[in-house]
Amino acid sequence: MTASIEALLRQLPPSTELASATAPFTGEPLPEVPQTGTEAVATTALACRAAQPDWATRPVRDRRRVLARFARLLVDEHDRLCDLMQWETGKARVHAAVEVQGVVSVARHYAARGGPYLGEGRALGAVPGLVSARVGYRPKGLVGVIAPWNYPLFLAVGDVVPALLAGNAVLSKADSQAPLTLLHARHLAVRAGVPEDVWQVVAGPGSRLGPALIDAVDHLSFTGSTATGREIARRCADRLIGTSLELGGKNPMIVCADADLRAAARGAVQAAFSNAGQMCIGIERIYIHEKVFDGFRDELVRRTARLRLGAGYGYDVDMGSLTSRRQLDLTRSHVADALAKGATVATGGRARPDLGPFFHEPTVLTGVTVEMTVYAEETFGPLVSLYPVTSEAEAIRLSNEGDYGLSASVWTRDLRRGRRIAAQVVAGAVNVNDGYLSAIASLGAPMGGMRTSGTGRRHGREGIVRYTEPQTVTTQRVATAYPDRFRGPLLRAMNAGTRALLAIRHRP
Image (cartoon, rainbow, N blue to C red; front, side, top):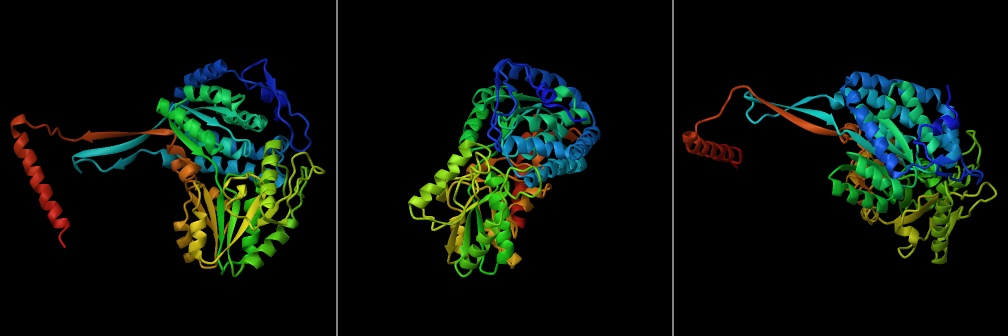
């Protein structure tokens, strides 16, 4: 049972204010979407809060079953979800399909592992045998999720899933570019058994709804730019509520002298040009040992030049469109600035209006220098720069330049060397002999950024306990209160005992 566009939009709070985005493939307007006002955000949040306690009191196993049903419905609606994502964002079918599979995997992972992640556990008590300590996890209450436009299913819904399993209600703000994808996912979640008011969606500009959402929730999850993330962090700090922020990146790849160049070039194409480069964990700069620079460059150029661009809804397209005029203009400006200052285009370099209004060729630059904008600023488009290096140490140093620290990639036949290099790279996730997918697809492991690339982690145990308040409960088996007159002798005896223990443990 597939909902119509009108039915999807009826999930939003009613409003006479309407707005529409532009379909990237054609430049035509997308359906008009009711724009939520700030008062409606507050009203919707109250409804979520009213529904949350009943949801939280349901056994975790029941909530896990709901998520398992949700995963099955996502699979059943695979084609519809892909169609909506392509229509709204312009991505290629293959990347839309990977996104559907990604959120299915997240739902299945937490349906299977959510119980152990949230289970009450023992901790070391103050006096073993006399005092027991147990730690449980209570839901935050109402979680806000600000959805990104580049991955309106995997990131937006992937953050909702663990919040729901933890017993929270969720209030999502759909991105103005891609609300229908999120609304269809929410429709499927309700069909799976999530109460309607436990997950609600609002729509409208972030500048207006962001502050209203922060004022209404107990925890906020945001994926987007570092600049916006800073402002969100400040506002949330004023309210003393937690945040999960996945922000910008200028992610590096290191190609060692012993790397399999064909595999490394294949991985670079995937990591740089998937989703037309509009990927937080995508690769934008590659450091190649000078001994293999020419060979790697040539292999990368060959593979990049073979990519098939287009606006089709089939699997015969390798790269789709950029999502907006803004992203196209940013990509073009980075290329133009680099060329004006002496860089060289190894392949690509042009917009492709013959394919659609926002298309740009996948582009490889060489000769990029520090004064060029593309050297340090995130492009978030199909653009990657190549740099020769003389040593492993130089590659690590250059990879760690800048303020970001989200993702990285290392290519070498020596896995021990790869892990050693990875340990020295400042990034929340480092993929050895893979471009980006291994880390984000390892759902039992935390994923997030260091430095200005964010705070908090998604996936794994960390990805669900962020939506909880740990509570410690201690139980003392025998009352140990002592009269005041014994206080001095007892404390002196404890101090003497501690001295003796420390002397024994630290004896050379």
